[in-house]
Length: 336
Image (cartoon, rainbow, N blue to C red):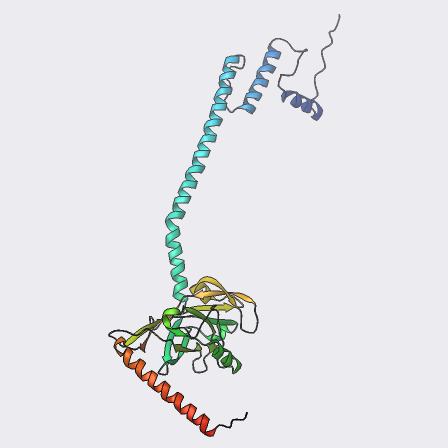
């Protein structure tokens, strides 16, 4: 009796299982030359099911039909495109909703934040006054802060005053006042003529470094002497008006303070002080003025008095010249 040798079966251990899994991952089913008939068909159907489950979640009912597998793959690809499109539409919708919410809430939020900052800000009050009578006046500027000066010890205050054409500031007088430590002011206008009349002069600018007021804890003050110019005579009214506009208030601090964020509008380049020529970026501060503007009245001559004034002036000039000549010949000593 002849015994037929059966083919060896793969071990159920780890090595045989790993080889079988490796063969199952390929593009084609593993070759099974030793199996035929129903066993080979079962092995191929099992491999098709694994591949269909890996490539697409659509279950293939008939693994032997190639048409069914193609339809399953097409449906899988179409489902993937639909899923990606749905995710993209959802992302775009969320972005549109977020942007709309931001645009809707931003003005309100910004206004509320700005209102909260302004509510905690103290006002800066500026007051201009003119003292003395006649053609020579003193302009006094006072600045009051709503918070303690102790918090602003590192800050400096600069006043940029605009002098109208009807007034002038003597630069030589300013130099004398600086030497006496009475005021710290500097003319920044060029081609300045103190002898020119009102109708031939231009507006000038003066920088005044304010000092802390000894009578007010939270105040600074600046002093500036001003003088009237000669004006054209009028035909009817014997007075003219000069308007002194409010100055620019500049502040420079070595460190940041809430008041700079509250009322700072822009930055202006100006000398740090009079002793050095360094340039600092000063903050142009917003303030509240007690008076809108300072208005000065200046007496001027009338045109109907022209002949009278000229005649009297000529007579007085001749008389004074005659008296001087008489005194010279009478009390003078001449030697040849």
